[in-house]
Image 1 (tube, helix red, strand yellow):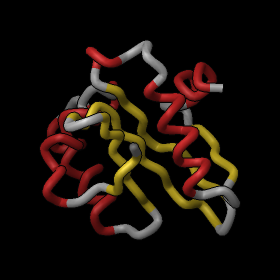
Image 2 (cartoon, helix red, strand yellow; image 1 turned 180 degrees about the horizontal axis):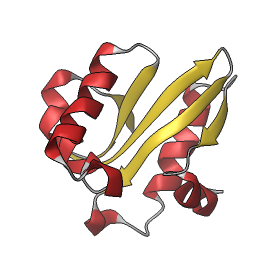
Image 3 (cartoon, helix red, strand yellow; image 1 turned 90 degrees about the vertical axis):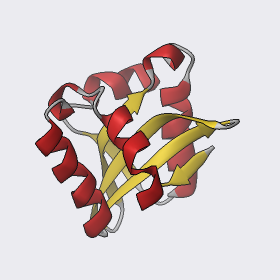
Image 4 (cartoon, one colour; image 1 turned 180 degrees about the vertical axis):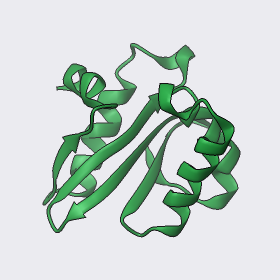
Length: 114
């Protein structure tokens, strides 16, 4: 189930984002989280299964019908189980009038999700 990021999920979100190669540095990670918290065009969602949050996906709303997937990450112990595909599908259902695009960091992952 896709849930919207809230401040009380900050540590979990930072942990999941840190699996992305560009988010290894703590300062960079803190800047990324702050961007999601302060900019309405940046939206972050967590993937929850039962009681565990195991994935994260972040989008940048480019214009009225285009969203760029900025970040996508799944806990390593839950990879290769279709969680990424489920997150992308849930986003498309949540924003049916949007076209989702990848950036250079998420393109290879999203190609696998199609």
